[in-house]
Image 1 (cartoon, rainbow, N blue to C red):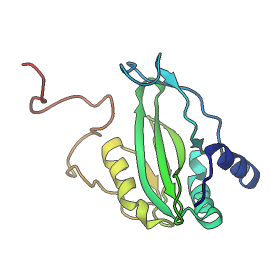
Image 2 (cartoon, rainbow, N blue to C red; image 1 turned 90 degrees about the vertical axis):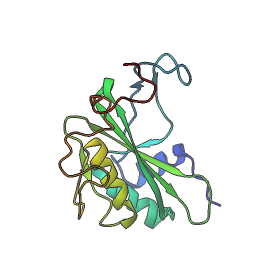
Image 3 (cartoon, rainbow, N blue to C red; image 1 turned 45 degrees about the horizontal axis):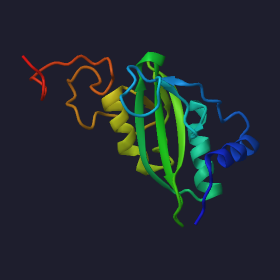
Length: 173
């Protein structure tokens, strides 16, 4: 089973794809949770990739390193830092732990190249990120809402999305 650590991946990408990997800066957790890292900022050990080169790096993982399965794409909204962080989780067919590529986008104009033309399994994950966070995937063949109706305004998973509609569970009137 392959076991490639994030540090090893950063070294390999630095050698084979110069300029594709970024140095991560700490992100704020506001407000800090009662559990987890304190006092509200952290850096992960995953590989942060230049957003414009995400397709190139993902294809390198697939074609050169054998990480052929894209499991999911997750989005985290760091409102205090003004960025979205996308995490792409890849697995090797022979097993082993996942490799995670991350890309950070500004909240005011979140867009990056789509993996869907080269990686059809990214289709619904990218549509979900578009629908719930407003992230545009340039080159996606059918970037439409997947959960919300077409007339819905806004992006409900953004941290600054206003609560509206019915009373939420556990809220007092």
